[in-house]
Image (cartoon, rainbow, N blue to C red):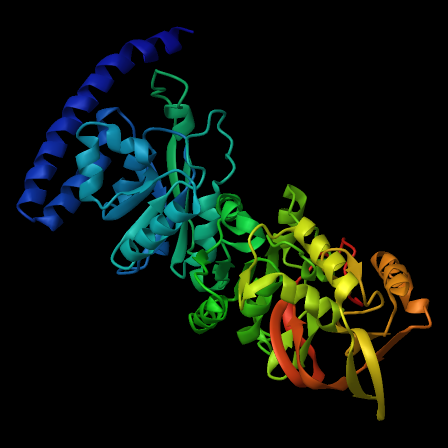
Length: 523
């Protein structure tokens, strides 16, 4: 107890002395900075840091200086326990920039000293600021060592705190060598939650061998292509949630917004050329199709879908729901991935399926022009279009060539797919497996009105395949020919043509899926 009282009594004048001394030094440093005397700033900063400890009657024992290579630039990492930690590091490494809390710039004079040393402030943790800070840090580290306290704040109990997320991002992003430093005895000297200085503590600095940054760097580079008009504006509303998730995981990520029909194809190509490793669609089936087109056959690259569309049929293949919960976000970023098949028809590609006949006419009813969905579109609108077409649709004559056989028919529906679900709830090809190397074909022959109601009432459960009016089979390719141009949809996007050559590209797309969900893959 007497020793504690002595420490408290001595601390007040020591703080006053240190403050006055620091003010004088900072003023001198500012003058040198104004005169562009950078070497003088560095020497005086180092002298200030080293002299602080003798002034309070302490000696810092530094071990491992031989681990610092002359002329090398590092990311220096140290534990954070005391207000004296910065001085301890500058005592052996004066020419260092600091990466730390923005609030330190609010301290008079100390702010000016930090700015002179190219201090990098850590702002609120969102993806935009994280990217800016890391870019600044990488830029500074080209010329000088940058010091970081990865805990973000001083420990309150002497134990190591959890590292802040931005530090994890840094380890993934940087190729600079990491210089680990351990500070011992500084918590006992002056912890955050105690006023007095303990003058009896032994102070030690251990400089450990550097860790090679290139071996630790994560080369992942993400791009999220968002269709803001998807799902009646759901894509745009999802952006803040997406930014929150990216900041939480501190990914090296860019968010791009589509501005027109087929714009996602251009953006996906750009991301591919920029070296992105993960190119993710945020929208509906059409957005996913556009994003995926340049990525087909790029098996070293990963794609995926965050659903924000209206029908959201493709996402069912991957085992995710129509909208993500917090659990779904977690599963998505675990990056379980698989190679899936891709269908192709007349130079177009489909990930879920294509449709001719009744369902293509339903898609035609939902469009006012290519790429533009009719206003007030939604699941209710889908149902209305289905009912309207159900009542008035007239089958057309079609010739189908598949499995070395040719047949003619009046076709009510002809769906060719990789996936199972269409129009939000219709399982037209309920047995489809997205990586079995086969297309699933569901051909429903001409029906009267009562038969139409009967068959379509069975489709949501997939039991229609047992009806005698339905031909259901798997094939690697199929040709379909009409007498005149007819509408057909590819992943919900509408086109017109007369002759159709349909085939499959096995395992052509590397994509994130939910192994815990009801996906449509053979694992």
